Length: 68
Image 1: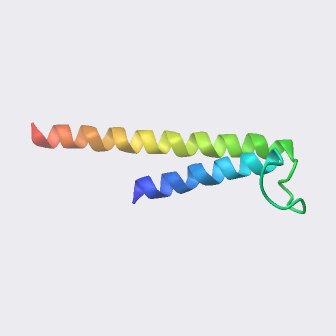
Image 2 (image 1 turned 90 degrees about the horizontal axis):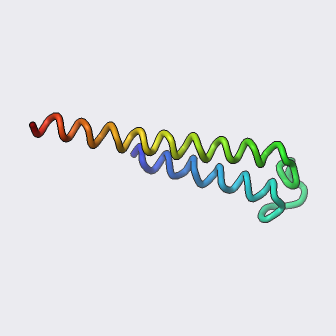
């Protein structure tokens, strides 16, 4: 479940960044060609990746501790 949520966060971050770069989305969107959303999208993506990596790392550590 955590992996799916993190992947959704990452996809949204990439989508926001792409929309701010005028790559996707309607021109009427407030994010379209808005450099502020390039930063916001990048930050959202990085946060999603960090949570995903942290969750996987904790899961691996717990499995190692419970098996020993």
